[in-house]
Amino acid sequence: MPTYSFRNKETGEEWEEFMSISASEELMENNPAIVKVPTGIAIIGGRGDGVKPTGDFKEVLSRISEQNPYSPLAAEYGKKDPTSVKVRDTVKKVRKKVGGPMNE
Image (tube, rainbow, N blue to C red):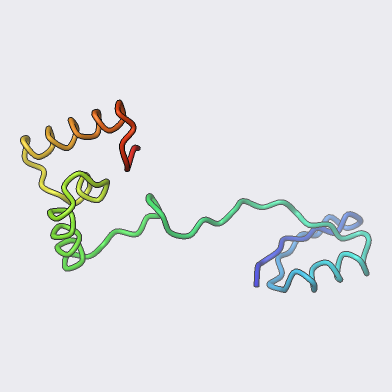
């Protein structure tokens, strides 16, 4: 169930409620002075979500990236020596130019 932010137009009071969609619609239908307040979208997961893997899991990601040396995972957790980085960058440029899989 989502959390909704509401505002009473008459009093200016704002609050949040954890309820179903039908309950929020019923609340607004029964109370015309109450409106939903737009809020930001909560995105869960994906890159940049602030969660960093621990040491053991980094090792697992490193081994996976060795088996997939040209993947985005390898760019983050793979080998960082100059040769590996240069090869990954070259493959990325060629894929972008040719239109191969895993374009970024």
